Image (cartoon, rainbow, N blue to C red; front, side, top):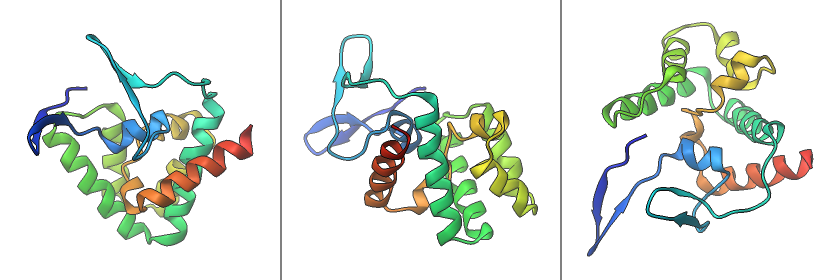
Length: 149
């Protein structure tokens, strides 16, 4: 993934996509480690795949409870549009785009909550997560991981 260096006040910085922060389990105030070749979360106990998916499913459930399928599709389209402009498009974006253009609410909800391999794979990219406030995302992340430990 390419990140553009931008001016932030009198400094330079990069904006990290929310999908990457969610995958890393990070939010505002958390730390990253920067070396000459990498940027990554500060070392901590590794998360198991089922913990990461529990977080993704919990976010999906919160979004479904609070928003209509139409609102979710609109957010997915907006997020994907931004990702295309930033040249941050991957295979999962194609699948999310089809779901966002479709009319089958069951297929959309299955992608957001399903336990099959396809749904789990799609949830590595959460183009609807921006519907929730950052504080709620942090709370979901903390409670979902605590429930799977």
